[in-house]
Image 1 (spheres, one colour):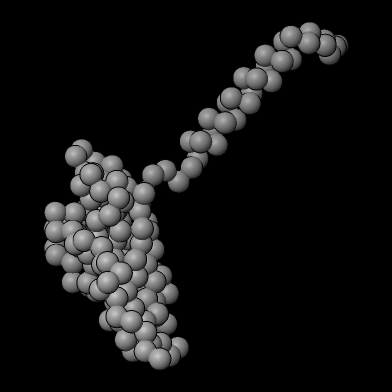
Image 2 (cartoon, rainbow, N blue to C red):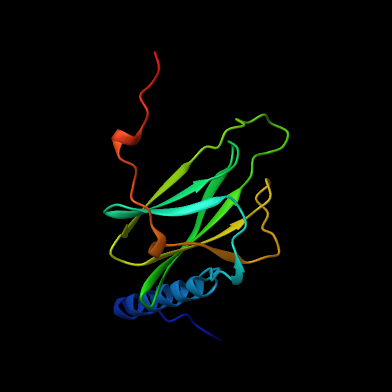
Length: 157
């Protein structure tokens, strides 16, 4: 008959360590992986997007009405530049929103000494992606300076 032979304590530790490492590699291999966005050669046709320079880059989106949301999808470092991929979601049509443009500023941690390219795509209001890829919306070569406090109009009393 067979009999169970106990493993020495040292062997159990080694087998346990190798088992833990193997399980870690198995879980890492099952991950979704890195999201590599598809780029389009077509120009961006959605709401106005530009970049402002300060110690870090700021991506500014100026949709035509209130209620729009801006979602950061990915930041990728390429040779000689950093690429930022954003998605714009229009408001739900069943709700009333402000009819005036609402400028949205998205500060980044990317230094303004590094060239920045912003790619954008417009989703539907439910957040489902369209068939199209991201389009180049703004470059740091055309960056604007940030508005100063003197340019802001005073409040009316």
